[in-house]
Image 1 (tube, one colour):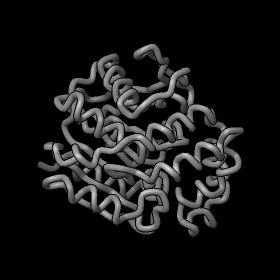
Image 2 (cartoon, helix red, strand yellow; image 1 turned 30 degrees about the horizontal axis):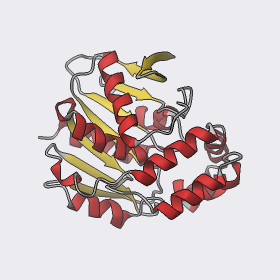
Image 3 (cartoon, helix red, strand yellow; image 1 turned 60 degrees about the vertical axis):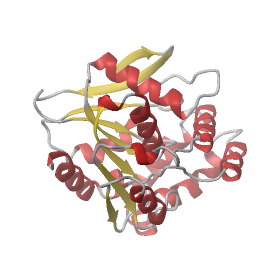
Length: 261
């Protein structure tokens, strides 16, 4: 385990460094998860890649700051963490809220980003009313919403066939800090990159799950359509967390995209 004090917040991270001439990839995970969500994908990726994993503030073993935070704050955390571990340029893979964080990083420091993968995310996610309701629901813990969240994360078939895995991911969700979860809900609620997503000039791959209940395919496809030259891929069957439900296919897409022109 590795920890770094970035912008006054202690962030838990791992920087898996291999061949310095191989690609460097930064993975930013979704709301209510820690970086273990990427482990099934790592098993499928090139072992020579250098990969940065981290728990965003309010998640996993990272600090939760006392003041409310924005997506821009999360982006500043990630920029500082990249500086801390020595990353000068990388491919950024943002899942769900991670995709919002990547969009903010690009606006703040575009020279840090070589390519972008927007997985199950969009220029704007959800409505203020929906996020306010989610925040109210987790006031005393994440348990009351856990089952409905898992229905958005994974397809019915996956949930039926992988009962033990499902229980494990449920444990991960409900053991996240409820206040940190609510803070991140508010950050998502207030984030809107509708007017700036078209400014992205690096290559972009957008990935959606055909049964994603959080960021439906049309939303992801619409975001890709706002970025010149962006490529859209639909995974099936798949919910909101393709690195768990479709790790082999996601790894294939990432490998092709990262090594492509």
